[in-house]
Length: 399
Image (cartoon, rainbow, N blue to C red; front, side):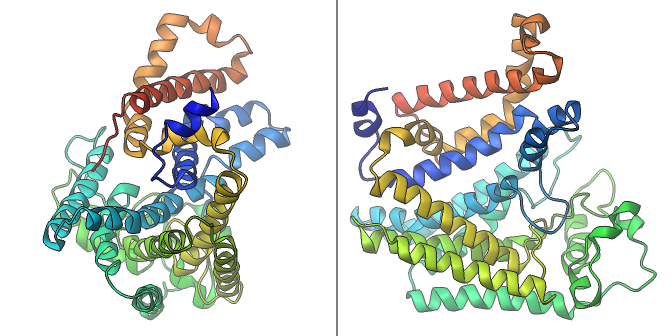
């Protein structure tokens, strides 16, 4: 790939570092086809495969692996893009009512697309609202409206969302000592993940969000009554997810204000403050860091990590001018919706096509234990080629 292609083919008005960061996020999501967890079972004594497996799966409850950063990063980058989008529309003279109407329509489409993707293998429409696209859609219009207020009010909204959400959970009754966790899908071996004392407000499927979903999700047609989400995921997580978008909104605002420089110090300072605050809340038991229910401390912690990622990409690409290095990721990042759909809709078709047309003898060329990785690499290659074709032909899926 020549320098000319890598730098000139990418529209220069875009922030390439942001596109590359988004590309990494989507690549991590599409990379689930590599099946590291399955391969690690064939090498139980291998630290290498154990690390890869850990970072391609979600942690059980507290803490974080690399895979846990996909959703907050995607959400954060939606916020980063908002000031750029607003500036572009205002330059075109687009009236507020039209922008608001498009935003509401986009929010609806994101929610609908999330429900559609969750319903692929269901007998009827699976009305569930914890999907990444659905969570973003539920908060997107509010984030858009907040782009029109002063930064001070944006930060007040950010703090108000997190404090109010934390307070609501803190006031909800803690499960009784004899609470039947098995009845809400919590396995017997889960006891090591249960919190005690005040932190018990954030235990799996025995919290405010669970109570809300038992009421809310049963308002929709279902094949059987909703009792719990096996992973502990919740509809109400869109509220602190909105706060993650507001962190991205601040990052986007700083990028525009500092252009053509990069506000690395602001990014790193923000990361330090957010990470420190999250760890203090977690270790004092005030609010544990739990991604699956998007606790306020998780919003702070993951937001700090997002700022570090953005700082790293900005330093490598904008400061050190390594745009050629970013090109493979930019191809993915500029078509994130297409990449998202590929990961959810194309996997079975692509993998079965390789099995039929190449045969297992070729797929097992590195041994049966590594067959999932080899097949996954072939599948990822097909995804990237499709996205590259779309990039070259300027075909970008937008909502």
